[in-house]
Length: 517
Image 1 (cartoon, one colour):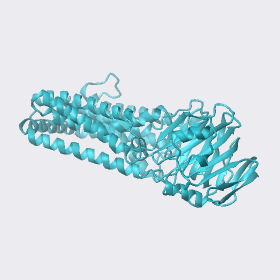
Image 2 (spheres, rainbow, N blue to C red):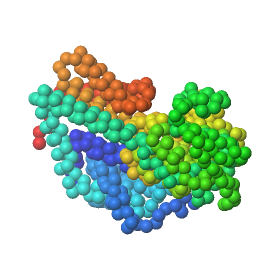
Image 3 (tube, rainbow, N blue to C red):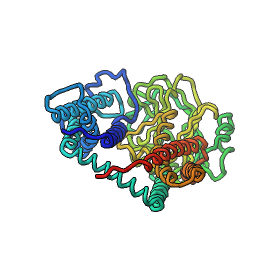
């Protein structure tokens, strides 16, 4: 096996690193590890082939092919210290397959400790096979593939050196086209943040679900419902004791009830909701005596709501998940539900985006139940965000339903997307800008590098950065979201860094000599 050159090895690194990024992105999220898990090894599915999901098995093979190809190319550059065979080509193949197996096994052990992933021996087998296929591809045609990539970049360089106007036009079209695709994607996503798919055949339960499978240990002493989202000023007044009827439009339906003295809820339109106390499944809980489709319809038509609860958890660490409030006739499909698991509060909201399964996304507020004291909790949804308040308006959490967060619903194939509210939201947001602003920065930086004067390059750089940062934020705030300067700075910052790096690299690249094949 002949040694490969420096330019080919650069492409091998690109293939390996991009392959690793995609591989880790597909296998690690959601980032959650429970080191206290007992018998985690028992979670492994021991089948070698998933006959019931061959598509997933094939996908796991393909996922490791770039890793196997790139790693074999690096082994081909310099003979590794570890040797499994006296024949170089066989040594490369065996080492790559071994590293593929070890990487896959490490990922599956991590997934065994992650309560939201399902480890499987079939995945290890498929990943190892994928690394072997990638290594075999390199041994058979790797030098030809890498040299072709080098020649392709060389031809592109000669074209850009000789036809700067045409090259600039192509880059400008790519920039505008990608920006248009991003705008269309943001618009499409945010149109799906709607309650239009709410089920109208549901009862409302407190302390459990209709089937009695998810009992919650705690008490609810007051319940408020309104088909209008209160703003922060109104919420502050509500928590200070102002009646909800005095804070909303007179056409808005409201319901107020206290328990156990007043089990009948009367709404603004004069309709009754009667709660029956259920003494089953070892717990006492409340369930409406019929469906409340008219309430669900009011909220669905308004695309917003406010829910208030005076509640107290009986334990600060409920082992099993328990539903505090649920608008559902099925334990795993609901319009909205609040539940306690451990010390966490979990919110599930059915939207067109989430589909029938409301676990994508599943919002987690860590350590919400730190004590057993009574708290007044207000939850509002205004079509762009869920806002939760506890006892005071300054003790609040915001869950954005904007495209810079919810895009992940379609980007990752995991069936249960659980998101911890807080710092993790910024990680999703950062990934959004890496997927949008980085390509735009690359296109714009390459376009600017073709301009002949430094002052023109600076001017065009500033214009492009403002266009991307402002354009993305404009798309995100339509139609109802508020301007967020943090997002603007993140978008412009990522674009600027990418564009400046691209200008420097392109300037050097255009001055170098293209290889001749």
